[in-house]
Image (cartoon, rainbow, N blue to C red; front, side):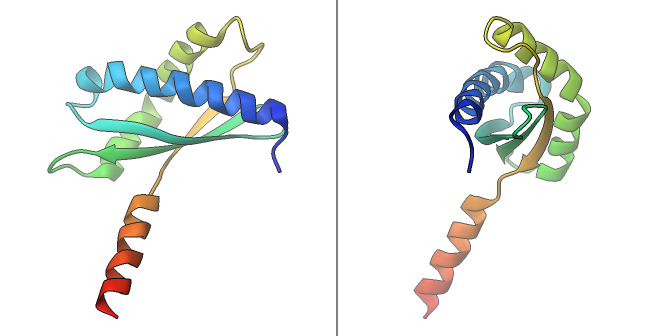
Length: 114
């Protein structure tokens, strides 16, 4: 169970990271659509698990995720510039692919077939 503070910080990070990816994905990630779906912050606020959904026509999502992970320091720096008045320290970011849409689609296909 997350505390109120963790929830508030998660929402703040989700909003700001979404805006960062919205503006930078056109230039850095060759037009891929990257959506931040969930941010989960550790109890000590030192780590944040960022779940992203990636849509890239004809591309490999794992390769793009590795690019995002390699640019994690720059993304964290941009995030720090945005939240410097709200947070004392910006958590370390860990990026993961959110595959919940694929999971839902798989379940729907299984239910259709039966």
